Length: 204
Length: 401
Image 1: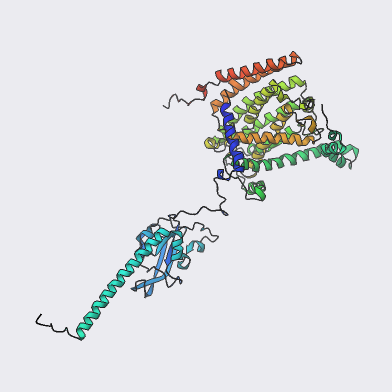
Image 2: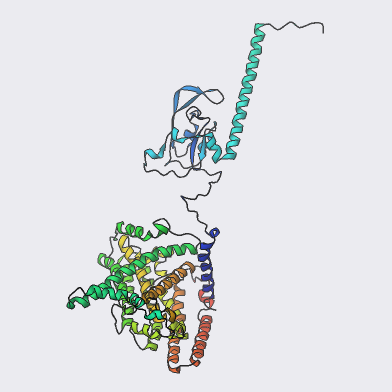
């Protein structure tokens, strides 16, 4: 009959109307500032710099190699190298950052800086509330604002951070082993130089 | 009639008449010569304050209701439960720039929203919102109401034409076609009530329905012709106020915003206000004609003030408007016209005949059976014949395919 489809539709919307008052599962929206959906582990918004230990300046992994600056498609990274060098996590002498700025308003969250970094020093953050009242200075993040501890990295991307840590310790172990071997070899050499090799005990 | 002792209790009688007494008390301070004019002025002030207040509340409740229908929460940020949302909206529309297109006809463009709101307000003058609460008790009140209602069509066309925008003009053309088609139905469905009461005066129509058999009232919706008339009236009223599913004149997905595309700031707010006020006034008239106006739904509830019943019924109608908006998708122009001229209008004409039959068959159960059978049979047959699915089926394009 004419109009029964309308009645059926009206019944459906009435069920939604009253149902949304009694069952909370019906409401699909989240009251955003008070309630939040946890961000996905592989979410990415904006890069940050990782540091080890407690001091952000001393533990900074970045060695100012400037690869990310060169690769960045919208050119939003500005890096200045230090004049002197400091040892990095494996003990090698490296440059460190005198300046590292990222312009938030230019960054397009492409993650290319993360892909190219050979030092696991730059990673993507999941923090998305980057609004500010100052649209010039407030949108240019310097190295202090960009630095986040390795623990923070573990808290937002646990799987990835564990892999990175494993790789770094492996590399460090390799370097240490190599250094040890080299040291042993050197020690052996010096020992050999100091006391010439004993003559072969003949007659065996 | 079973009357409760409360109905004659002076407290409730005074509560029922509290606004009338208040007006008389205020007017009493003035010299006798000024009293009638001051009384009318107070009534006008009341109408101009109460209905926009209701409009403000309705906008927030509509958004919350639509949200609930779509399993959302709706606005809840401004004030407790989002109730101050209309204040924020009002401030926003007041502070926005008022843009007039360069090539628009500035005078007509300016006048359209004003004339719309004024004519819609005029309609409230004859609506009895409670016992003894009607601003102007005209003998031809119904006629006056429809005359004012017809003027809104002119405003819509003024807005669409003066904007010099193709979307505005298309929206206005649609609006005029739709409103004139359904205006006929609106009038003819009301004529049935006039045929039974023999009066065009709205207070008299309410008085005719304000009697009871046992506890049940004699509202016209409880008769076969009244129910049919009410349904046709409701359809026409929805089309007349451009509400979904008949919101073609402002169909945002095809016409930007229809006839008010080129309006911004406070003029747009006036259009918005006019639309909601038209909804209130047309619901008020429907309440008066078919739902017993300010009379109580049961004889033992007559002690409740009459204005509570009137506004309660109007708000119920508004709720149904919102409910329909949340349910039904927009019609196509040809479907709208087919529906008006092939189904609603013939059915309303038939309803006039049935009403005449009801009037002349006299008291008794026979007229109930005869009138109901005629109307139900007509509904089924016309629904089958006139609204065959070929009209509502997939659209066939003669040249484009």
